[in-house]
Length: 79
Image (tube, rainbow, N blue to C red; front, top):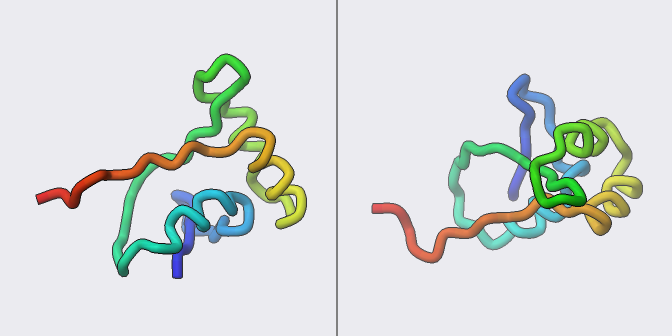
């Protein structure tokens, strides 16, 4: 089961349902990365990212539909 944590260790699964859904099919693995929420111009929008933290699951789904955090995928495993 996928789980997301902030750099301070707080779980934030419910705030990014699109990432949890995308990770559902992954095998047991630990990934380290950054979550970026794009602004209307396509550039990273830190204010939009901060606006996703600390909201309830219902509001998070609305925000995810409006401005989803893109999920990048690898086409092949790293060797």
